[in-house]
Image 1 (cartoon, rainbow, N blue to C red):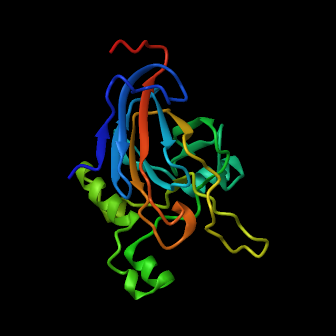
Image 2 (cartoon, rainbow, N blue to C red):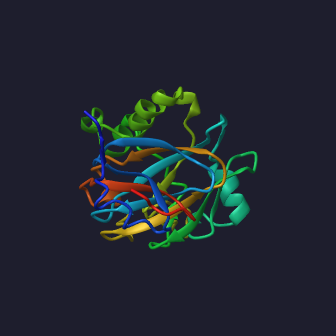
Length: 226
């Protein structure tokens, strides 16, 4: 069963943060994976439809998937562990893959990582072992592009709130987003975007209730002629 729904043209494109011709407009089901190549110059708007949903995300240069998002290089260059407008999402080579060009939330995480069956078991008990998790979503969706486990790296968590305490401990707490809040990313090169619409139900990153998100790709400077 597909985890994405194509939005009818009559309602498509309205929520995009950066206007332009709509290249793609899909709703990703709660707990589901999603992927697409966003062409250089196009803008991906991620819409948190119901609020308080975490969207795990990996980025790869479409021409060479070995050039991939690096949390360490991104944090080092911007000297901040949170992402917001102006953040440049870089590979470990320094290559700019995407840039956050608009943001209605202000804080997105790049250190909390992705949930897995193994981490669920460690954190929440053996009874969670069979729960679907983001790593499984990444592996399922990544296989469509020839990616495997060795291609997974520390990821971005859009809309997720991960404060760091003075002693260095991380917290996963209620998100700062709300229904309809958006973040927009401009592709600086043709970029494969891989997403897990996080299925986690054991901590408040999704308000204990995973919900759908909307992915809209627009081409600025072009009219929508549909």
